[in-house]
Length: 178
Image (cartoon, rainbow, N blue to C red; front, side, top):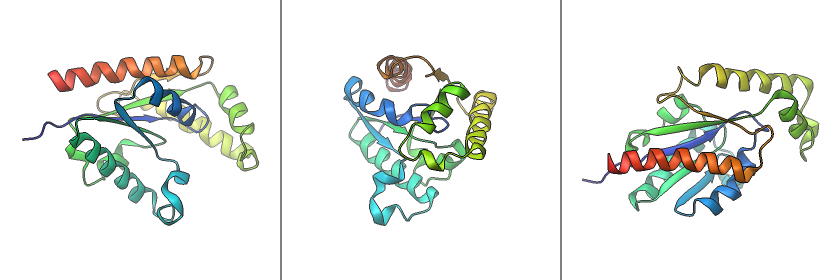
């Protein structure tokens, strides 16, 4: 019987650094496959899929990766109830979420300095402020196991990834050896 492996999902509001840390994750964690929920990574045909279908595809990728004994980290806004709807959700020993968070001023500045800055209206910025706060407020109750938060306000991607790596490897070794 195959041993189930854990899956790791790095989530957070837009502008907290999920995409930014992906490249550094690949450098510091070469034994893990890193995927993004970003629509641009799905190509033109798959980009037309509904979010839940894209999440399901990502979990299928992660399941295939785990069958080779490798770990997977998915970066993107991904909620536990979306993961639980995926048909291979139970193929993992555990699904761990990590929340990246920064203060509202930092996140808004990051969003307003992106190429797509025109889409970030005051209303959109407020919505992401509310979502970021929801993640903080519900990290202990809506996530099982509870979701740790890493504050990205003033630390560099290299340092953020060191914190992610420490958490992931701790959980990885517990599930593999435990």
